[in-house]
Image (cartoon, rainbow, N blue to C red; front, side, top):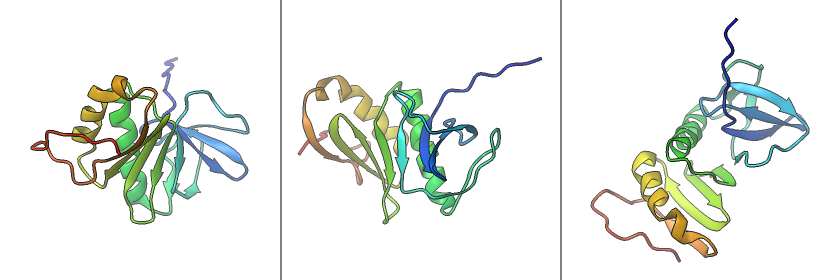
Length: 143
């Protein structure tokens, strides 16, 4: 018998319960409870969910973007309260009182930069717009 332990990547409300999934999108559990430190995901509508299988969504591209952001957050050991897919198909993440607009691409670059300043953001509030951030940019501004 092989046991493979999977971390919770996030959760999405689904049919009156919370659907917990791995950073790769594999359904782990459906529960009415909220697991502490699990990332709430919004903007995705799940169309099919079977435990042990990858979830299906109405917007597969959006789901892929959310999963990529969750995997990158895990890589940099960052915890966020919420990841949202906006109507314009941009990724936004929230932690504490900070909103970070990530846009549609380059999550690795953007999240790696946020992880570097993450400790300095404690106790602050505002928005960081990284939608058009590139490796040539030197400043990250909290407004």
